[in-house]
Image (cartoon, protein in one colour):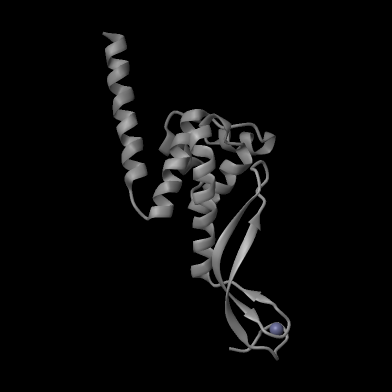
Amino acid sequence: MKCHCCNKGRMIEKMVSEKVELEGAPGFQIDGLQVLECDKCHDILVDSVTARERTKKILRKLIQYYSPRMTKVPGKVAHWMRHALGLSQSELASAVGGIDPSTFAHAAARNSTIDHYAAFVLLSLCADFVTEGSEGRKLIDKTKKVDKILERKAAS
Ligand SMILES: [Zn+2]
């Protein structure tokens, strides 16, 4: 495969690392990204498979960092995660339940932290995305059931 940039070099498979700087989050590095690099001009090509892997690697880091810090998820980071998952504000709001979709836009604009429970839902959905599973969803549904039971008990 010829380089589309210089039209001379050949594209060679290469493993690279990337320093990731997301606004509001501490910087971190992700490793083992498979890219194609031109042997002449060093232009780098990322295919859609690698792009998805990159997103997953970043989400893994964010989950690791923010799971023990659910009260400290900045609005801008939440915004990045929501986009990575391909969710609209209203889709995320309905997953959280009882929250206005604009809450996320406000948190991103002010970069204030998002609600603790919203962070739990968002991180659980991120975990599903990374694992391509549904444990996060199940966990969210379970907490909703438990909430209902607790409310009912409080009312009686
Ligand atoms: Zn090139």
